[in-house]
Length: 465
Image (cartoon, rainbow, N blue to C red; front, side, top):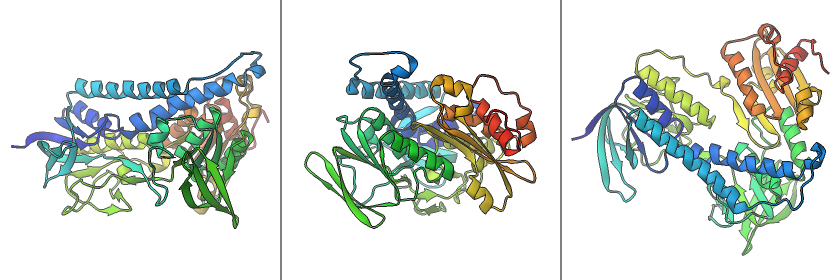
């Protein structure tokens, strides 16, 4: 007999475990199925361990920049194995924390892979294929996430060619590194290894790095990377990669010219594909497009009682998007009538140096959508706190509808902007106009004052520049 639940969640990442906890709060009997690590890719192999590594690289950068603060240190060095070990410990600590939270909320966790086995049924099997349990529930949420997209000829081998997994627990600190793909993942790894002392070449097929960001932000980041001695190739086509015994060589075409780049290791960071295999979707009304499950505004699939959230459903591939989707779908199941998530209000963050954060429309997208825009900009060189911190590079850019004053988008590059973007996200969620933002008192001295000044600049009222 199948064990009966109100809700079964397949996948224990930031979408799945949050959905399970919210359902438990709403007095549902909940089961969660996870085949590997609670916390999913984000906590174990993505968001969290990369931030631990990036923190180490920031410290290394500061230790080699002490003179500007009046300090001196001799024989500055690091133990790369300890740097990597700490990042794994941080991930392990948080994974254990998720386990504790699920236990606290009395969510039943099954260790294995889940597969639909008919209407309202899910079969759980172990890694060796042996059956673990058969579950029954009126509602089933698929939250199986995604994995790195593999380019033919550039398949990760665990040694010379890395995906994000190998890059998070590298066997060596490479002296020379090639990174293919300048999205958030590629740019963060490129920034980490560069700041740890590697010679890095960043290769991007599009005409600019971080191509989903505002064009001005992309241009600034590229200049910042190049100032840090990173080699950046945009509009570049990788014609092939070959292994050289103890390294790799990539043949790259840029502007009709072909060059070969040699390095110790290569990271491929060219997007992700949804984990739609072995879910038992065959024979259901669940629709899959380009490896991602199609859902409506409340995460419902075409199959009654089956829902999908997070990276499994496509862009934006962000942990906080998955978590919020999990809450929305569970509250809808419970009859609470939640607001469908507005994708345009999901902030995006890239934790390279300099940091990048944005929400809403870029200036170009706003104009394409037919808006007459007012644009404000404020550089951090005009911000007292940024100067005092020794991080005056970067700017804040805001895009408003000229007729209504609606905040269409906000884009930031510079110190701690990933911690500040939530201010603009709240403003958009509240449908704030320029009037409320201009009348908001920002504390002094803070880097956030640049957010205020950018709004003022859009309306000809900027003070400090």
